[in-house]
Length: 321
Image (cartoon, rainbow, N blue to C red; front, side, top):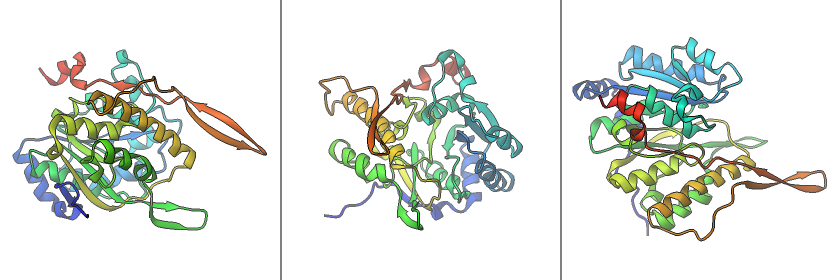
């Protein structure tokens, strides 16, 4: 029997009157920040900043700041980002007392400390078809409805083969891993079209109350934590039509799935959905074929969880005077 998606599902075109969004923002006295988590993104970050800044800062004052949170890129990502007008922060230099880990979730967590906005938008830095809709589409539900706390993007994701490009086929980890486990344990969340999408926005007052997995599990962890904290009514999703970016290899997706499962098991146990009877392994094991032989490759994938930012004294001092 067919059923509906979650109640708050919109197409970005609903929010395309940007001057109306600016009016809502100003009437509610809100500041809005956009951050790009980066690692070696010199090929795309400049265009992303230019497109968003031109339309949503210069033409329409919807954004108050654009920042890059960088994981020690080896290329010119930081230089390019600065040239195009973004504030650039080295992730390892933010809250140095608490150490530093490699991973997107680490950058997102630390961005809460350096950004000034009441609403935070995060957009991946490898999008080839960047457009202002990637930002204003996510902001629309938050500006229209004060009960909405967190908005996810979804879209068609073309996938490249050696011969051509298929108009869909991305999101493989979602369909073979995340949607099945959500269906079993958190069925409300299985109705998100792309629970692992890299573009989302939320209210600081919500984001500061949830932990952040430093690695691949950050998106899944967010959805489960928000569902348990504030219920499904706090969540929304917006259709952005299409996102073109680089596709990952099967091997890379396997490592991603391992990190996501780590976060899932932690959350499922925390919220009483299951009980683990043994300690999970601490290495992802894959097989690599070299000539006529297979070799075992073990990869350590961080399962570190950053605590809710509201528990960090320096954050409280800065934002809770």
